[in-house]
Amino acid sequence: MVVFLSGVSLLSVRNTIVFAVATSLMATGLAGWVVFFWVRQNEVSARSLQNLAKLGIVDGFMYRSVPIRDQYEPRFRAARRQISIMGFGLRALREDFGGQFANWAHSVEVRILLVDPDAPGAECSYADQRDAEEANHAGSIKNDVAAMLSFTRELRAEHPDTFQIHLYSCIPSINVCIIDDEAFWGPFLSGLQSRNTMTLLCQRGGHMYGALVDHFDQIWSSPALSRPAPEG
Image: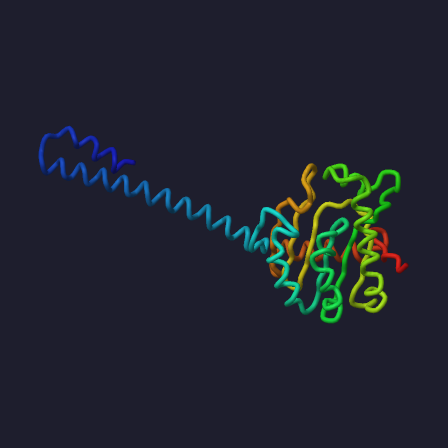
């Protein structure tokens, strides 16, 4: 600023050499401003990238489920240790990947958390409330849960150690899909279909991946928060 204003003040002197010096000072001042704002912008970007790295966020999507199936599919095929999924009725999972469930059960540990259709009470359940918030037909999520349990009944009986389903009774807040060292997750938002809600992809090593794994494991293992799905 000082250099630029010094150049401006010299413009009043009617001398060719002084004029050249004045314009040089003004150009230097402008260049200084450009460099200053460029450095400031890069500092902001660097801080943002550092924060994302700490959280372990590596990608983000405007939707989940079917619209980003191409993100899930190769990861499901490459899974070697675990596939842990939490949602409401997970109809899209059953319709899109149900034919692969048996292959999953032979190669990884599969754990699925579905909302308990009668929690916290049959007369006013989380499933019914979510149906109302998504403008679904009444009973849609309950039917999806029943369909998933029916669809996987034989598979769960044949592979009780590697393909399991629990019904959770805690307040539904997020959708989670953990595949080995990566985790997709997104919130449930009022007035939006779950499939139309944003999704973030996190990797092991970041804070968010660890928090999501702990969240899933706590719900899965606590008798107060979930129960094994009925076999019949």
